[in-house]
Figure 1 (cartoon, one colour):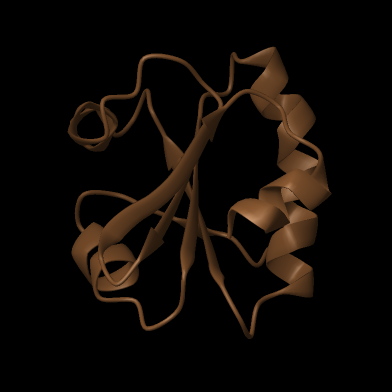
Figure 2 (cartoon, helix red, strand yellow; figure 1 turned 90 degrees about the horizontal axis):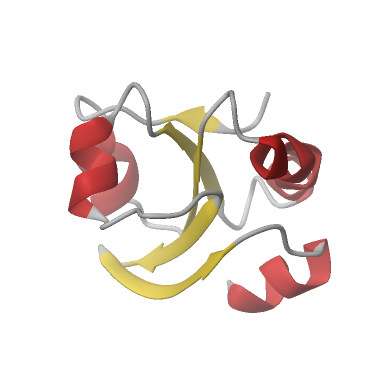
Length: 102
């Protein structure tokens, strides 16, 4: 699996200090649309592992991070560059649209 699971313990190192753009997928195991989006996120991670970092945040386990990003609906995709949010989108998106966000 090319995606990184992000927790409050590794968030700063893996996301804020990343030298590559970061795509964060906020999800939950009970969320149907999240499960639909998961294979697309895995594909993006595998095909672009040299260019971007793909991370997943389970909102049930990491409520602090979900609150930090103001997550109210999932799946939520957030793109960060140099520690700053540059793009975000709620809901299932086609792969091309996600790549365009990055």
